[in-house]
Length: 523
Ligand SMILES: *[C@@H]1O[C@H](CO)[C@@H](O)[C@H](O)[C@H]1NC(C)=O
Ligand SMILES: *[C@@H]1O[C@H](CO)[C@@H](O)[C@H](O)[C@H]1NC(C)=O
Ligand SMILES: *[C@@H]1O[C@H](CO)[C@@H](O)[C@H](O)[C@H]1NC(C)=O
Ligand SMILES: *[C@@H]1O[C@H](CO)[C@@H](O)[C@H](O)[C@H]1NC(C)=O
Ligand SMILES: *[C@@H]1O[C@H](CO)[C@@H](O)[C@H](O)[C@H]1NC(C)=O
Image (cartoon, rainbow, N blue to C red; front, side):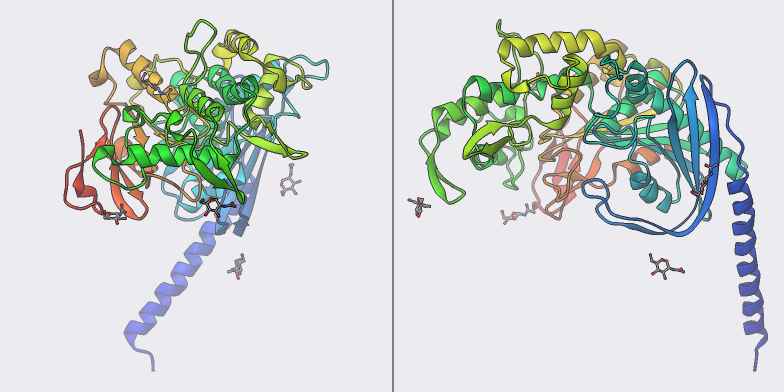
């Protein structure tokens, strides 16, 4: 027997199923009939929407740890060409068919890729955002620019570099927002940028060059001052070569561990994390003569190894003692930049792929350039050449953020203090320069805050070390939409709640147990 109540429920159910079908049918129509958007400075060659139901993005080592499943989206490919350039750029836009949260989010790239495409579109669309990512016309290979750095005649591919450096940031923002508006019939209420590393650099580019494009920009571990910091990444290799000393990863780890053991308690809390690396004055020579077990053999730490470690932390300087850039902080792993390989039983240096490719292709303009032979003098020249030729293209460190400020934008930058790839002092220097230009911290804090995360490695790799920020993007959204400027970021260290403070403040333990965020204050 049906009660009136259950019949009513049944009818409601049928009606809602019908409504869902209508949404999907209209969406399919809207998805497959999208018109080419007008993009200033570019010709849109094609637009192609495909409705994908229960779509899966499979996991990808380093970029997408777990697969994204159950996506119902309109997946749009837009292909464009810049006026006067012989390029072909793909912008992908993924639009949730149901439960769009009214926001647009563009995702940045990684290494030599301007966008991770499906690998960031999947997680972003899953959260209800209209999402966009671009290949900048240089394809998707984070690890190598082999295919696009140079033209067939051996000269630098300037158009591709400009696309990678900044033009693609505008493409992905303009195309993404236009397609979002067309599909839903209304503009996204808020637009965001989200990226780390190369993606962080692109976020700074957005604030500097395209100040009206995004309401909120989240920048992690930015590859800021690219032409300089990338050459500085070669420094540990040059030091090992000049000192003719190639420590194993195990030896290097002994120094990192000893620095953490000495400097972790400075903040009154022994939690495996150096709170403020600038307050750490660990002396690597202390380990000279110590015996450590590495790969089944006991070795005695040599003075030459301590000397290498000290120079890696100091960072590069020229023959007159002038600092060229920063070093790695105490607590950071040293074996990414001071990497070595065993060849016929002997250790030799092995350059990190970013500096390796940048110096060969763009600075030396010779794919066969022999980085093993770079000495201190040559490295100093490489610094000058790289900066002179490329700062204005890919430096991404113009401190004049006044247009972004006037447009009402919010910029949240965070950087792990144990970043083993990009020197956190680059982010600190940028914030200081913006302050100097705009007249002090009170003129900056209302739209740009920097958070330094103690002990955290590059972009908080997995498994994450240190005081890892929990959801900095959520903090940005509440800053933009509720005008709540983040006084601190929520974080966790080994499962215990912590806070991360806006620079120049640091989180200080104020007592009450090491497990609670309330035991810390920004001082
Ligand atoms: C549009 O996308 C579909 C599905 O990926 C593909 O089969 C088709 O060739 C594309 N059409 C154009 C014009 O690119
Ligand atoms: C969605 O796809 C998953 C595989 O990824 C499959 O197990 C599941 O049955 C699918 N669901 C529907 C409703 O088709
Ligand atoms: C908290 O402190 C206790 C005692 O000092 C220590 O055993 C524990 O590992 C600490 N926990 C964390 C998460 O720091
Ligand atoms: C290394 O030295 C320690 C301490 O003297 C000793 O216990 C250990 O067996 C040695 N390991 C090897 C591989 O010789
Ligand atoms: C970072 O900058 C500070 C302040 O200028 C300086 O004291 C420190 O040595 C720098 N650290 C590294 C690792 O370069």
